[in-house]
Amino acid sequence: MKKQLHKSNLSLYLASSVFIIIGIVCFVMSVVILVTSIMNKVRFDEVTAEISEISVGKNSLSESSRGGEIYYDVYVDYVYNAEIYEYVNLGVYIAGMYEGEEVDILVNPDEPTEIKMMGQDAINIAGALVGGVLSFGVGVFLFYPVYKAEKKKKDLLAFGNYIYAVVDSVEKELKISVGKKHEHPYIVYCTYTDEVTGMQYKFKSDTFWIDPYPKIKEGSRIKVYVDDRDFINHYVSIEEALEA
Image (cartoon, rainbow, N blue to C red):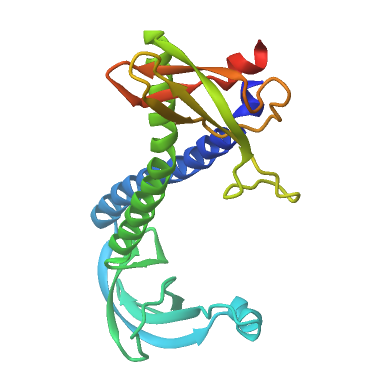
């Protein structure tokens, strides 16, 4: 029943977990690229090459007609160990490149046609780090409110201080909808009146997804766990009301 009651929280947990995992993967990728880059600088030789041709990539021809992004293939010529290598794909395009431009590349001594542009790894690392930070940040942003609410609930339940409030209304939270049918969760509004001071305290439950009628309805009593020092910290116990 708990899963049905708070499936919106579960959805947020799942979404935040996906973003956090993507962020971690991006961080790992940046470390792998950095280590590989360091190894390549030690193992590969630095050579100056000249861009001989910049052409639209084959996959871009069909994509451009559909409004997709256009990709470019860059080919270079260079001399390595007295051998001339022509029309070798650089594997990367940077805006502003032009035919005839000289670029520094790294050449694999064991396979001279395997090349990488100097600084390419730094760009890849920066991209992975930015993606990682953004994804991780979104994940934490989604996770933190749910975590905070769950912690508050556990703390209030642990203290065990509660009062009984009277249900004012049971409404649907129209700001939240799930699925093709646009289902909306329920929310309970209730009031507690202090018999000594006569002061009234208004409470609102967390959203939940089970129709509470007839166990929770206008005029029925419901348990509310509270912090004696400040009733702002409270938890309306929908679970106990439905299980009664």
